[in-house]
Image 1 (tube, rainbow, N blue to C red):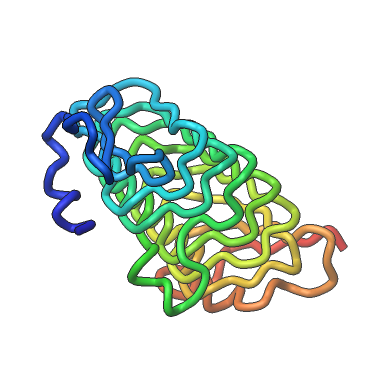
Image 2: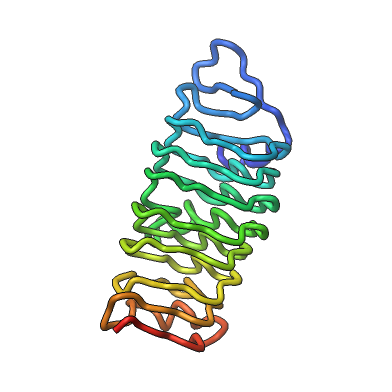
Length: 219
């Protein structure tokens, strides 16, 4: 099960030849045909390139590992919950050009696909690529993020997505929908190209500040 795999992080994986379901490459555990990445050893360091063909990164797959950066293939579709939790050395994420949703997009997904980069304290900046439409529940909660670049086409930033981060200023498209506490500690918000504020903007920053100090628009 997923939870059992999460507890095997200190292991270097080896799979017997002829296994019908699993394979291991450089100590990393994958499904037989490489569409699922199950677990990376916690001892893994440096830059990790998720191989082309991987479609799902399982929950806790990289949790507690010592990687400093990671690149996603365009084949990637799903990152499950806690996938990069407590990666204290992680500084850079290249999301690639395939994934459209970073975490769960609605309430039924919150438990299954949340807290992806929780407590990655050295992840200071993220650039979300153009094809991404949704940032899921608590995806970057309690991380070290100070700056974030969002694409113009982003549609939804879910509840607690950037909760308890160190972002002081964020630029949002007017059409984005914001969940409760999505940007709870942001002090300055700039709204791009719109006559109206994004839906949910008050609730998105209500947890700590009540209201951001400044909200500016292009209009």
